[in-house]
Image (cartoon, rainbow, N blue to C red; front, top):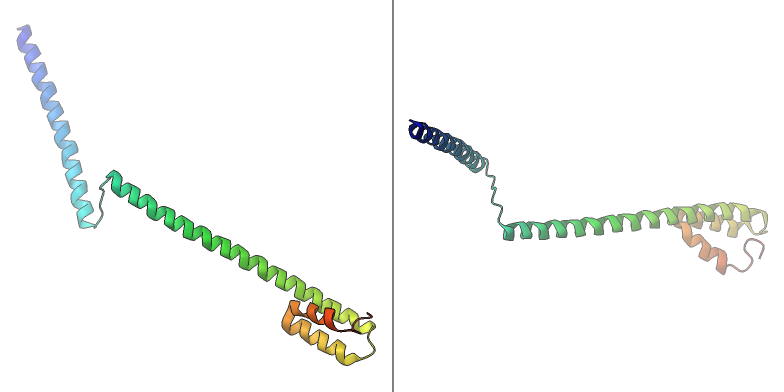
Length: 131
């Protein structure tokens, strides 16, 4: 009697495990069918994972390059604006020193239109701005 109960319990345990395995197997099959229908793949081979990581690294590197270029453009534009603004202010200030107003007007126009290139005009003009 005892052995019959043990055998029956063993059969119940085995049957329960088979049912559980079938449920998980059915779930896996259902997931695979849904992924196939939705064109998704869930292959997790190490070689494929390594290739994906290489693509991610390439994407990250190109993203980092874009950030660096963006920062460079930002700093360059900021310096261009600041030196142009300072040039314009200096050209206005130079009206007080120079007796020939045409040089001052040219200085203001260069500062407005060419920004930082005003400083080249400032350096190379002999009698400009009280030198």
